[in-house]
Image 1 (cartoon, rainbow, N blue to C red):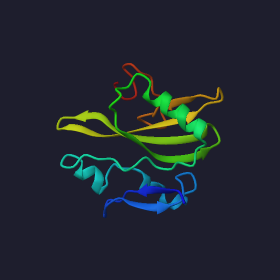
Image 2: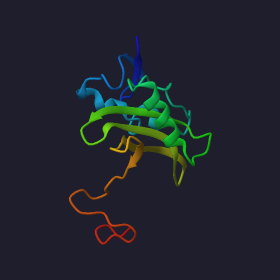
Image 3: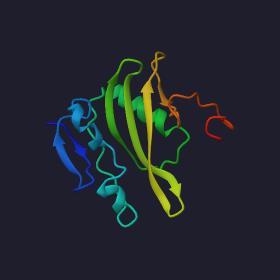
Image 4: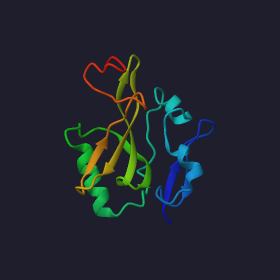
Length: 144
């Protein structure tokens, strides 16, 4: 039976039955590593859980891996943290990795990816101030 990992701010990661795609919506917050014991413990014991059984068809999974790793270092450690069926993108996924750096060293970083109408995976940009258009570079709404 397929399994995936749930992360919690109160306990160690645990494996639960089913795929990410089949998981009950009330547990979606348990798929994010940030703010959990695993995230807090990273500086002392860096690790990611095993690659989850996402529920995505194998060809889509392979295409996502190729798209995500394009121009990234081969040693990038990452895990698909969530998969959601989405009207606009067919599938939307959250990918968590440790390639973002803060002042103390590597930190958790999550990106959203989705399948567009063209049938290819693309990163979904996040608007840092919902409700206002983000206009990089030197955005008048946020200064970046």
